[in-house]
Amino acid sequence: MQTLHDAAALRAVVSGWRKSGQTVGLVPTMGNLHAGHFALVDLARARGAQRVVVSLFVNPTQFGPGEDFERYPRTLAQDQAGLAERGCDALFAPDVATMYPFGPQNSVSIHVPQITDVLEGAHRPGHFDGVATVVCKLLNLAQPDLAVFGQKDFQQLLVVQRMVRDLALPVQIVPAPIVRAGDGLALSSRNQYLSPQERALASRIHATLLQMRQQIAQGQPRAAVEQKAAAELSGAGFVPDYVAIRHADDLSEPETGQRAGLVALIAARLGATRLIDNLLLDNAGA
Image 1: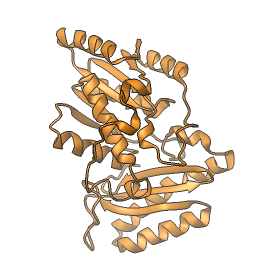
Image 2: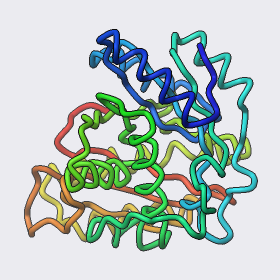
Image 3: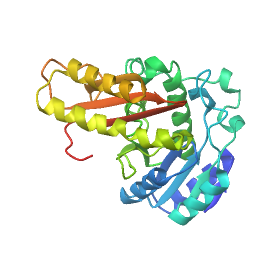
Image 4: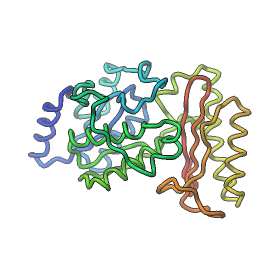
């Protein structure tokens, strides 16, 4: 596996692959890789990518004031070893100057309207502008045939899909199922912030999502399901930012009595750690 740090080197490698007729997959990450990330590499292969590039970049423009940009774990050597073992072809690990040649504050910024105004967008103003901007840059740099994004960041996935379609970018966006621990907790680099006591509680989020799916299937009113779930999480020690049931295609609020095409989404703080998760309510799996 090659580790590349500058744009010209990445372009040269990808160009060589393309000249030999090989398809290219991209897996954008912020590093500190775990089994969930490695599953994205596997999915890129399964979807036909003959060469896989994983990008590793902790993007400053998607972190707001007081968020964990400075303490976000950076584990390059560990990530290199894991990706090499997984058969990744290239790791692209640029610095800030490569991604933002005029500085993050003077960068062109991409705003995806409407879908970024709610849920995560409402609680983290500017977050999705940073996400859309860096993803667009990575797609332009790597020129992949397909790019894989995990469904754990459900709203992010929708934002990327809409940006790619609206800007007519020639890449297929492949959603990847959430990878969970045995107790249901969605794998995340931020899980390591949890104390042992918090980690034992954290699986309550997934259990709550499963309960919400059952209640909607039983015909209980959406608002009542959301309110009950938020109250139960609060009672267990979480501080919810939102507990919501929305249309899975655009995160708009569903009509009264609607049961199909919905997703339940939760963001909640447990101690100093903010956790997010979601569950498609049409899907009988966990």
